[in-house]
Image (cartoon, rainbow, N blue to C red; front, top):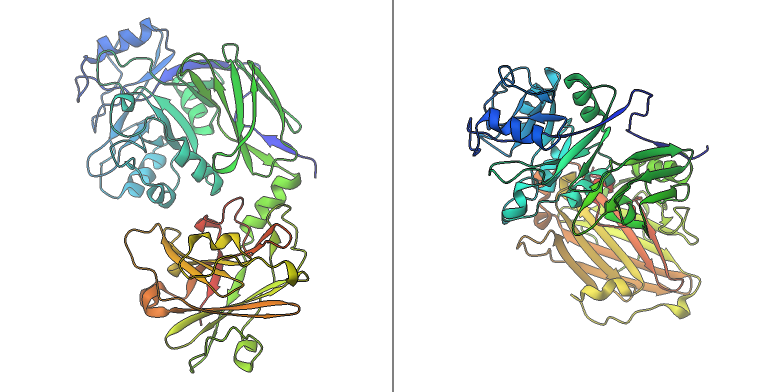
Length: 497
C-alpha cells in the first residue's frame, strides 16, 4: 500500500486564512476592559474572528459593533473543575463537576470543547495527563496560552499533546491569549483555513483541525502530495518535524520544508516553525497512512494476550520452567525487535502462574551466544540492571493505564523493582531466580498478590515484557509500545483465572 498523508487542512479554491482569538475575558467576568472596547482592540489589531469567553457567562455578541470581525458565541466553563472553552455556544452549559458530562453537552448542541492551559499552576497539572486520557470527545487542548506566560506553570502544553497523539487520540492544538489584563493582546492565536468568512466556517475549521497556532510566525502554505509534506512560512528561520512523543525527526534552517514520511516510524508527524526571538508556529498533526506507519499502528492496536494458569499449590522459586506445573501455563512467544518491528531473531517465551499468594512470571530466553552474556550487576536494587542481559516486566494491576510496577531481572538473577510513578509506595517483595544452560537462560519472578492490590484489581491487568539482549545489542518487546516501554496505554493484556 503506497504511503500517503492525511491532512486536516482544507485546500479548496475558496480557502481563506483567518486569524483569531478564542479565549478573551471582559468586565463581564474578570477581564479589565468592557466587551465593546475589547472587540475594538482586536479589530484594530487586524483580527478576523474573536470569542468573548467570560467565566460561566454566555454574553451574546448581539449588540456589539464587530466592524466586520466575526464574533463567535462562547464562554469559559470554570466552576467546579478544570477549565474548558465552549466554542460556538448556543446556550449556557451548567458547569457541573463531571467534566465528561459537560463535554457531552457541548457536543450535543453542536459546539466544541477546548481544554484550557493544561500546564497552568505550580504543579503544572491544571489537567493531568491521566485526566486528558480519561476524558473523551473534546476537540483539543490549548498548546499555547498567553496569560500563563506571566503565571506559574508552563504556557505551552506540547508535551501532553504529543503523549495524547502517541496514544492514538485525535486531539487538535489551539493557541489563545486568555486575555485578562489590558496589555495581554496578540500573545498567542489560532489561524484557521476556512471555507469562507463566516462564524459557521470558522467553527467548522476549528472542529476539523484546519488551523495552526502561532505567536509570531505566519504559515502561508501547507500541502501534502503522496508521502511528501510541504510547509512554507515566509518569516520562519528554521523548521522541525516531530513524531510520536515529541521525537524530533528532522530539522533544517530556512522558511520552507519538504519532508518525506514514507519511512517514518510513527503514526503521525507535526511541524514547528521558528522565527526571530521566541516566535513560533505549530501545525496540527498529519496522520501517515500506508507503509511502515500502518504496520506499526496495527501492531500497537493488536495488543497481545497472556492467560495465566491458576494452581492451588505454592510454587518454589527455582527458575526452572520445565516441570509439570509450569507446562500447564500458556506460553507466548510474540516478541518483536524494537528496531525493525519484525519478529525477534531468537525466541523468548513468557508464562504466568497464579498461586494463592503470588503472581509468578516465567521467561525463557534462548541465546546462541551464551559466551557473550553480559552480567555486570552483582546486587539487587541496582537501577542499572537494564544494561545487562535480562528482562524488564511492566505490570499494571487492573489495567488502569495510570500506574504500573516496573521490574528488571538480569540473567544472573538480580532484580530491581519500582512503582511508576513512585508516589511514595514501597515496592513489592520481589523474589527471583535464574537458571542458565548451553542454549539460554530461564527467569522466574514471584510477586505477592497482596502487595499488588490484587483484591480490587479485577481479572484483566496490563502487562508488557522487554528483553535486553546485549549479546547482539538488540531489544525485543512483547507488546508493541513504540520507542519507549513506559507506555501503559499500549501494554498487552494479562488475563487472570
